[in-house]
Length: 329
Image 1: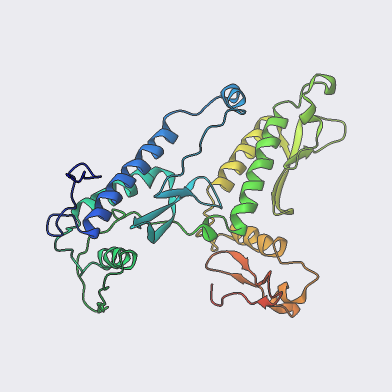
Image 2: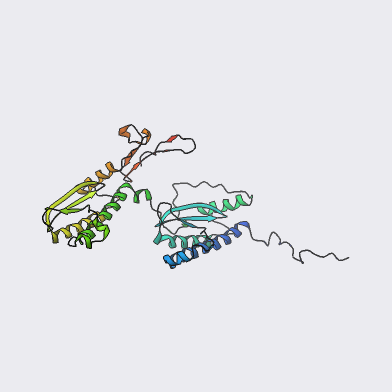
């Protein structure tokens, strides 16, 4: 009898002819980065209208997750980009500005392409981590190499020189107060431009009292007081200004506030110093738990002159124990 081959004559590849696990992971990494780049480009091509979103609301579209990137939890203006290898995140470049994401993804593609699957460059810590990730997945021996800090070597950067941002600095307490101050000024300027209209003709939103100006006289609409408010506090004002000069003052005020650098405020400027101090007072932690109060009030929280925000501790959800804040932030 002739035995039939259940595999139709197909036999296993010889070990010497089959690709190594490291080469397989390189091929997979290149496929996945291409997928991530295509998903990123797709996100950037066209924004759907409200009507399109409404029509597609009930459709069972499968949400495809990009392997190498995801939006930051703090802001969709920033993206976390991952160095991924052998289904493991080797490291993450956090909070990359949207305009630089494509460059970082291109950097990853170039990085993967330049890795030798035959003789990988173990002097590069990222390539060593990739190799060890493959080794762990396939139960192979890992490489242990110690890098000396005092040796400067030009190594291949997976992210093409792109750096992430510190969102604690970008979205600090000063930044939050600045955003609110600009919003109030925008409304005040819009309101000012409606000042000659009779109340019945004004839009409903303009019936609300503006924050940054008022009439100087009860019986006249030709003179104004202009106010610089920050964090709920009156910082400065000018009074009895004519209508034409009043609008110039409001627009200039908005320009001044927009120019304030929240990561690096110029505290030599007396007005900015007053603004800065107002933010410290306004954002001071208030809590029934003494641990969350400021150090001056017996707690652990303190104002950081590096990140321009209150640094506070937290209560662990499981143990309910208080975790003090990191020092020297």
